[in-house]
Amino acid sequence: MSVIVPFYNRGDDLTDTLDGLSSLVYPNLQVILVDDGSTDNGPDLAGDFVGKFPMAVLIANGLNRGAGASRNHGLTFATGDYVWFADSDDEWSPSILLELASVARRHEADVVICQGMRVDQYGSHRGIVEPFDRGGTLSGSEIRTALLDGKVRGYLWNKLIRRAIIPDNPFPEIDTLEDFCGLIGILSHANSVVQVNRVLYRYIYRADSLTSSTERHLSDFDLLRDVMRTAALEEFRDDSRSLSSLHFDYANWHLLKVRTAVAAFSPSRARTAVRSIASQMRFRHLLRISIPYPWIAIEGVFVKILGGAYPGIWRTARRTRSRVVVLVRRRRR
Image 1 (cartoon, rainbow, N blue to C red):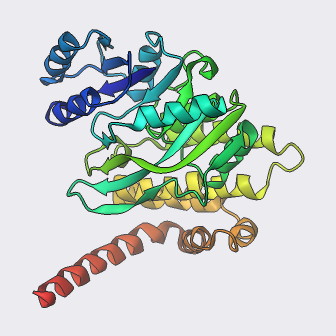
Image 2: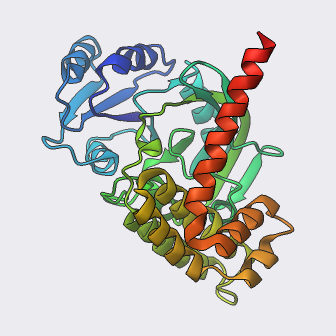
């Protein structure tokens, strides 16, 4: 078993992460720490950890190249039959690998997926990640369809993956969503995927995390869309505009680009970006997804109708909501 943990300037959180790694219950566990060009004390902390654990290794990218390049680099050192990719600022059950590996071997699965708890930086629970209706085994084709449908997320940290099905350099060197892009390619080689109805990971959402960064590039979303559209064409050869494909286009491309532009760009640039995105959206597509995915359809209709005015209205509504929340809290006191 190999665990790959990239880190970049996470010195404050890395101590807890290393403690979490040392608490993992699994025999002969290989831990691969990948320093992505850190300029803080993270490499020193990782070096101390490696000195205490014979099966641990510390490698360095030299320059800051991103999580995708770090994971690719770590894979070249992985010797385990299964690989787990953990994030450097989260928490997990000490038994996560023991439980996932037991399921993997019992079912001869290529991938095992557990549930995670989304937690904010103050410790408040924000919902379950991968809220399966039930556990069970899926084929590689079924799990790729589930990714398109949004029923399975593109996270790596709640998935144990057989090393043999991971191609060379699966993760693109982009600022965000590299896990999603890499995972869809990996799953094309999977024959069986097992879901486990157990919360074994705590995904800690932080305002300064990479996935919430306001410096995302919209081109990254376009790359993701190209990857997923290729997957959609492979899964739905007779209908490239399948419901699953449309759900992905709107949930993980059009609307995700809109949210990023509104959060990251200046007002004038956001208006231009949203106007362009809205021009590519179609009411007939939104109508088609409105029954299975009503909230996505509703948000899409607002963007389509408002166009360049959407960012300003969204920001006003957000400010108003914040003021109301503050007033309610004051009155409760």
